[in-house]
Length: 372
Image (cartoon, rainbow, N blue to C red; front, top):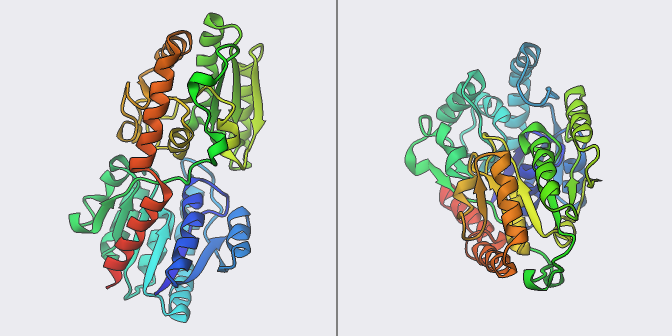
């Protein structure tokens, strides 16, 4: 089978990590792959280093977050040219399927007027507006299949795609080496460390994390806090938000650890992970990684998060910063056995629902069913 894979970003985010992890699974099946990526960022280099054929496509750059009118004009102007490029790549590869890893590529894929199946992997929630309508109409015109990482993310596309062409498949993660999993009962009860992991952006909630940390610190003065991540986009808005978070943390024992390659090394040093994501977030990969590492999670009841966290069983859900802080205080000052039970339940949830092997098997099976 020949697959043309298209990604809308060259930076490395959660969706791009999913793509990178899928590539070896395609190789094991003996499938030929060509990957189209805008620019020559981290993703481009990682794919090429893995030995896969990579080609630069023109897709942006545009500002992060809400798109400006100028962004929209540039986007529409480049759609035809990108569509021609996609059609040329598909023809050269003799592609059996086009895998689209981002909604901004859908209009150009539709413009290419290909006769091969199109699979859109939907990782993030796309809010109402012209961008969603344009992407949805592109899905309809190509008679595409949609693979949604949760029900919350998939819901907007139901009006454009027949039910039998839409599948919900939660992401999977590889899990840590055995030496990175530390039983919560054997962790020292003094000086607990609470972390927040993710690129520094308003939707990831670092400002809310700092607000919760201030409340927790008042109740548990010995508690320490770590923020892992960096702005994904180098733009004034991202830098301003980063500066705001650092200013809000002034006077608190908060470490800004920067971007980390090995998330499990970071999780191994945490007693608790807070995930104060905004309402439009999907399931967030870091929750699954914390489950795999056996680190208790307290997350906002937002977006697709309630689909993966069973409240009071393998994690805790909060409706506000104040409630998140209160739950953290109760957990860290209460019976350590409760933390251990929750940690064990989280590990079992990962083994049952969110392993990388399970995810890849289902993705490959669905691609096979689409192409047959």
